[in-house]
Image 1 (cartoon, helix red, strand yellow):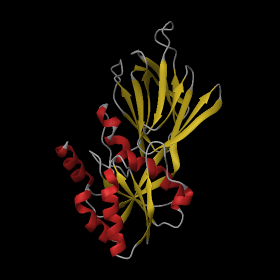
Image 2: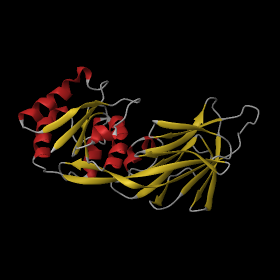
Image 3: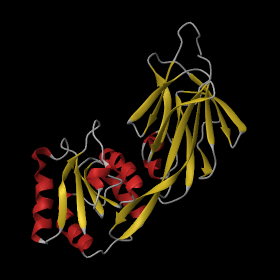
Image 4: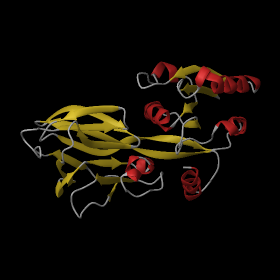
Length: 281
């Protein structure tokens, strides 16, 4: 086994946890690559991933998401050591590192696959932007506080026009993120579906809608609520990549062809994990 360690230097001050892991792997005669630092400006490259069997990420959920989307391309399983706050994606915290490493070395784990979604932005029928998300694609207003008008279609069929602060298109993994804060449902993370949750909709129809993973969701940006003031509309992918949208732009969101494999050390029920996280926070 060869381990690639990815660390968020803002979460692991002076790389103390990283050094602790490297020392333990050396003691156990396990090969590892020099740690890759992961920030908003850096990412995991094919050269760094080459020859590795497992990726270990030290940081919070944001760090895990950034690395996980690359692991999908390299077909590498990922395990997280939580150095952040909530840590829904991480397998363990710093208090259980040695035990986790021992079980990793003995291959006492199973893989849990998580779906990704892909968003493509079209302007005048021309593709201008595309990106992936493990958690969610969020379309919301920026600048002045104005209502955002948009239409939602599913599989080419018109569903509804909304006036709202925005809309979240989420995976099951992302259901415990912004979707939850906006009043959306919590979904078991290995499920296969797409969640659509309006943000503060000015309508009685303000509930989330769950669609099959194979469905195609199209959001069409409407005209500004006040033409004189105009509007600023942004589409965010996992809070990292983003693009500013214009009226009549279309963003089509579908399930991505690949998936992310998370290493799980035990069969702890998702509801048990959720209950513990909610109690802690």
